[in-house]
Amino acid sequence: MLNEFRKSRIKSIEELIEIFGKEEVHDILLQKIIEEKYTLEALEGVYGAKKQYIQDYFTGTLLELKLQILELTVGDMIEQSKKKLKVFSIQYLKVSGKLKKSEKGFDDEEVERAREYPIERLLIGSIRKTGSRLSTKCPFHEEKTPSFVVYPDNSWHCFGCTAHGRNAIDYLMKKDKLSFQEAVRSLI
Image 1 (tube, one colour):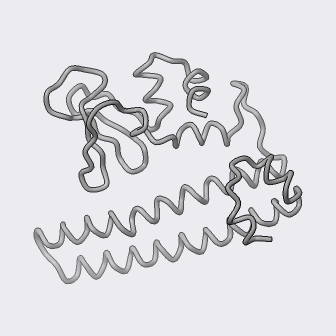
Image 2 (cartoon, rainbow, N blue to C red):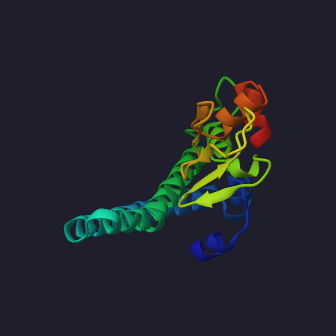
Image 3 (cartoon, one colour):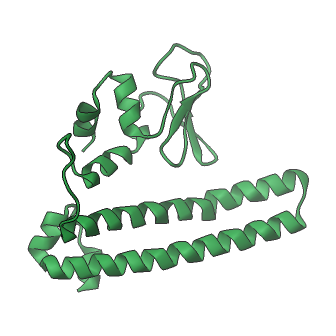
């Protein structure tokens, strides 16, 4: 059953429950949470060991380069694992009936999905990848040289006008002058 679950392209918990049943989805999500916690612990262990090795044996520019490569590879894998763990946990709470709708009309899963919506999909114009970051011209002010940066955790900052935010919701609220509810609704 777990293999069928992994292969399914179903997006919502409701669809999974309809196909597999509530108890089965509950058990599968619990198993996925446990697996992802082990994966995260292993990745953090590898990251720590490699970082220590790099710091012990390299100096100067080579040290910085090796640390950047470590961050782009294992560091990104850690971030992805954390996101998966968060999604599985929210889905588990939803299936367990412990996830409540907020007073704003959205449940935690919907708000989290909106927060994690990739900001690069909202940007217009030329986007350049620099290491693990993306850069482009700022949508909040006129400029000739790109100073707007999107980080791997989906936060963003403009070094020209100092606009900044933590996620896609913040971005839409500032760019389109939307309320929180309007921004979330447009992202889910």
